Image (spheres, helix red, strand yellow):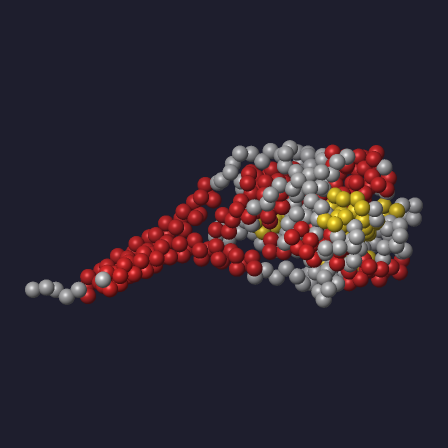
Length: 463
């Protein structure tokens, strides 16, 4: 009886060992990808930049003043660029970016483990410089600033928000920027919304706020708040309507090419469920592919953010920002950005995406570079249409429909009018795990054969 149990245990352990060998390559590659993401160092200063800071915009005293707050450690890219373009395109505001210090400061998609699409923003003013030059602004826009918490490097954002608004100032939070505004004490007693993925964190932390779901934005008097990421454009257009009327809001939407103006009438919108399952197979890749994102003078802010904030969400691609030189580029509406690479020193990329519609000089420069390199230069917005529509459709073509759809759900962008195709899987997505399992099975088989041969040599010969 005891020998029978012992043989059973040995067989079980032997089978478990072989199963472990079969799964080991797959688990090892998956673990390597997860560890690589966790090992990213998302916070910290921008790379050294020695050039002079750019000149500030000229102030027009006949216009209202809107301030977009940024952190020096990190600010969510679409949360900042989308509302900034809408406000500037309205023509009704002086629009300034302010931060604790006036120095190149990173902007990137959130959460931080998405890793790439880093570029650096030069604020127009530090808090102290703005306060010395102007009074309380008419509008303060607060994107997601993850280090704007007590004890962290951007905590100065909280203090400035507590002291800068006055009775006439409207505060507009974008996405997880609602947490920053709540941490500053400005949402107490108000009704507000935020990104659905942020709700589980802010609801228990700020019970003094009446949090609501199922809307693109909430207007609660002096405070307006948006849902996730791309809903910031809806909330900003609505805020333009509050200041200047419906005609101005519709004119601004047309100027930036925004197609979802129905939310000006009714902000109701249930965010589709987000699931990690769509992109998990991409963690089995042997290394990530690289896409270049070209920055040039006059680049459209929303077009730029549509690439920077979309492709990393496939968990398959690093997006590297690049310019003709690593110097300040000024966007369509006067935002100052610094790419992390220049064309001469950029790592090898498979594709170089050119956002928006560059002028002839910028187009010629990038085409010359493309002709002398192995990268494909692609102007994915050249056919016309809203930038996020085109970026998500391109992502679906290069990945799968579920991955593009899930990326849209993460940034809370409506997908009903998008053509994401019908491809729900790719051969490579299936081949990678199969190849890893087959490799593990072969290793287990070879090891088993060697074990049996060794056992045969140890069995004594019989007379």
